[in-house]
Image 1 (spheres, rainbow, N blue to C red):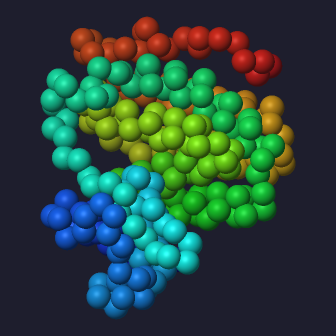
Image 2 (image 1 turned 90 degrees about the vertical axis):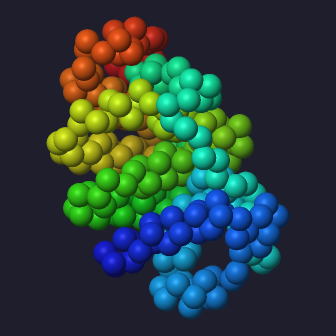
Length: 251
């Protein structure tokens, strides 16, 4: 995929999502074929395919082999400052602690289950993530796709959905408020290296190493965000959730 295509598929994904918001398509509707969408939007079918993946990761569409792409849900416009917002009262460090516990075990299991095609998919995601960082793009979709893809390797729908739910907590006000303090994107390059290390451990089919590298990746994220946090913020939860809750045999 070229740099232009990489930029385009995100824009096309946003256009399709807005069409769902505007009621152009309803739940149960089938989207037009890739070829028709590509001609209508004047982009390649590859761009359309990647845009569909974006919607699929958001649980908005379902791709049915041999049948087409069907709308399964509509985007929900939720005010991020709403006190009733489902994820509003979970702080970023509480989230990261939970992700360490869950996703390290998911990576461990994925290393046992991974196929050649799984490895190729992870490599493709990291290749696109590299391009995004080179362009100083604010988009985190490849980051999310990488973690989702690892969960999907397990072929366990409970684990797949659990991982998706964990990611949704990143949309809460406290997480977004923390990211307002972040101006240096070098940290994302460090986390890309973590992703590469996780991929290597899964490719080697080494479950213990996969668990360790995923745990350490999220520990690196946690410690870097701790450094960048406003410790005087009354919503700061780093002191409560900065300590590793259990020993997971990483020595």
